[in-house]
Image: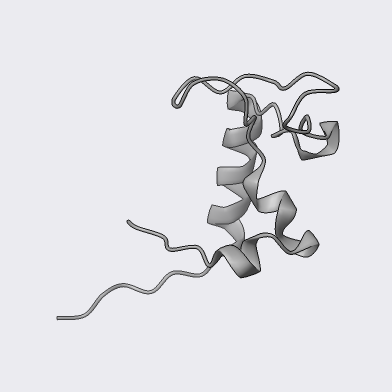
Length: 74
């Protein structure tokens, strides 16, 4: 899947949470930025959740029990 992002929309404050990844380091090897550098460090509230396999299983169980599916007809 390809996603095209409009830079004029992406820079709006209400969308800043969508790009929560460290911006320092080489491409493909992002690392946390340091205070006082050229690039502002990622705020802690934007860090991804630390998910466990148990959390994944609980979520999958919740979805299966609460989402109605329909069978495809040919």
